[in-house]
Amino acid sequence: MRIEKCWFCSSTIYPGHGIQFVRNDAKIFHFCRSKCHKNFKMKRNPRKVKWTKAYRRLHGKDMTQDSTFEFERKRNRPERYDRNLTENTLKAIKTIDKVRSRREAKHIERRKKGKKAQEMREAVKELEQNISLVKAPSVLKEDPSLTLPKIKVKVSHAQVENQPMEE
Image 1 (cartoon, rainbow, N blue to C red):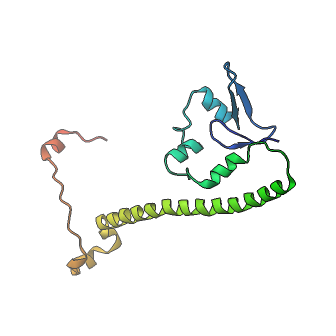
Image 2: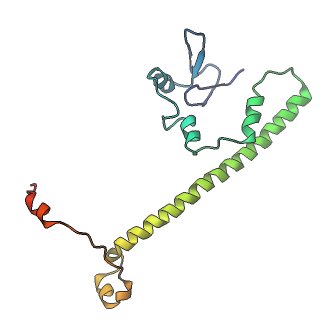
């Protein structure tokens, strides 16, 4: 039993699933579903299609370099059966899956950290611009320290007068 990888989106293809395309030069392409096969036929680049693994890795959304990926490549090679080796490999697979899941969680947290700071800056900016919606205007008149400096915008009256109103 051999588990293949989709050429387009890099997801796993189990035996009996997916589509296989053989080009004239005898290169074999495996696709997990018709969506990937159709995108391949339309000559789309997987690195530019947002839902593929290639796009996510290229744009820093998924982990790209990790020692656990090397183990996955290594275990796909066929080797002579040895009971002790198989037992040790199965134990190693379990521990490596735990390590990988921890590292992915850390990677996601690091990505979220920058996003939180950016959202906070945007929220403060919006609050500064719309303080009158949060505080009643009568309170702002009583305590001038609560008001923020007004942003002045120059509008040329000549341009405004020349343009007719739409109905």
